[in-house]
Image (tube, rainbow, N blue to C red; front, side):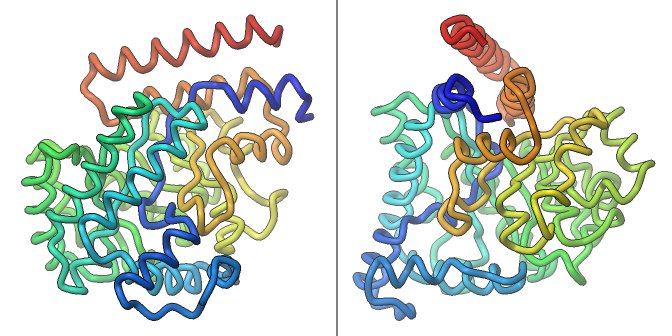
Length: 346
């Protein structure tokens, strides 16, 4: 039950977000203003009209809407605004650290300077950090449907952008028909460059997609990974090797990756001992926040305060930070959780 005490705990608990897309955080008002300023046609004329666009029957429809609306983001200053607004929104939820993904091909294909978008993003987050103290890092999430050949250009920009806070390399986009194996060499070079690696896998495709991301890409974390429940051997591997699954429950429901809350495998994964984290994915597109996702895992999966603490610490321990910084983050989360539990008596 979501008791008043648990509601307050969720609102105030220290949090870490590891799976959130910058483009998917754009507010309807900001989207409308950027589209008008940049001369980009979208099928809406006011904020209410923009809000109606965020409706999808399946993952393919979501991708189409995502790509069409991302066209409104044109300049480095646009990314700076998005990052600043997201940083403030995250800090208001007591999110201490966030790893935020950029979708580079959505912008490169429109002739944009990818380094400019990263610099703008870093500038916006840095301003939010000065005002709130939130820590942040950036990951590039390459759309696998564009194939591995173009990934090399993006990886080179990622390598050059590491001084701007880029720490991660990922593949996302459409899993169907686009397995991870062709990206093995790209990922090997990303690791060699000093980037952490992760991959969207097992969101809408089955266990072979997850096995490929683990064995061929050596992914440290997996975005979603919910289809791992279809393979008992895979579940055992994830548990024994502590491969982290960044779970986004509302996203999975609204894209049709899972049909209902009752059929979502989060509880099964958690009870199997798999290291899972909770995330918002695309907050605007899925009408949620990280705080709201924690409320929903209580309401729909019966998680209690002990479980919420485990989830929060899983996220801190899985952060792509140097060990000393990660240790400090984990200790900070532990101390804040203990103090809040003591204060609320739960």
